[in-house]
Image (cartoon, rainbow, N blue to C red; front, side):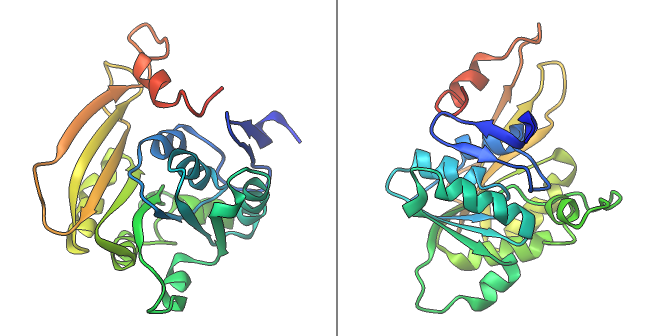
Length: 239
């Protein structure tokens, strides 16, 4: 096993030798900034890093982690079972679409959902099925994701995602039609002089209660050193 197949966090570790998509900045920031609750849904858990971060942050929460890819499930299952949060995380090996179809009416809804959604609609699909599922919205179209999550949340439940600016309008439209309003837009820049490369978006189900809170942060300073914001945001997770 190479170094890239193992990632150590403060309170858990991530094995990622099988999953197509490895631990990265997007998932780290999403896990640290996402809205939570007592019942949390992680759509497309991959290695399980988001589910574990949410379980660490929200100490009374139970997390349901859904993943379609066989290889990713191998890593997620191991990561969950070897963590101290194992009794609070349930892994569901299925597509999100099937997860929706198989739910019973009496099953409780969720307080929040988190997802690092596939978003490369217009680029060439990846040569491996796992990376295609993880990266391309053909496997989980935005309207299907937004409508499905909305149906699983309580009245004012939250839905947090990380997406690039090129699909911001399209994703916002899907969420609006599904009954969400954009509560918070956190723009993430790599360095101050560049435009935002990612948006952490926190949606809330229901009618807008206020204007969208908008903030911009940088991962590195102008001299390329790691920013204090990035250090503080991830201080409870990264070694």
